Length: 114
Image (cartoon, rainbow, N blue to C red; front, side, top):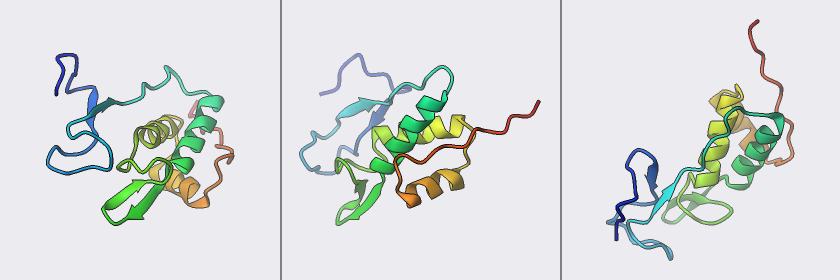
């Protein structure tokens, strides 16, 4: 059942309505986690933890979140990726953090042009 409060610009469909899920109602809508107004070092460390802990895992039905088995990328993985991108990391650097698998890895301070 869709609600009138759902906005298409801020909502993310968890899975297509046609697919049957593992315990989730079809058409369930979850909002993306809001980004911080500016990304601090602490935000970046939380983001590293989010992308590493919520890394993709291949499953019979496709890619799922390693932590909670929701369709990948889950909300926390998307949030962590967006925060790290705002911090100045490129996609390859984020992928390397995930591959390394260390949720306590230190994010380098971004180089900012003067």
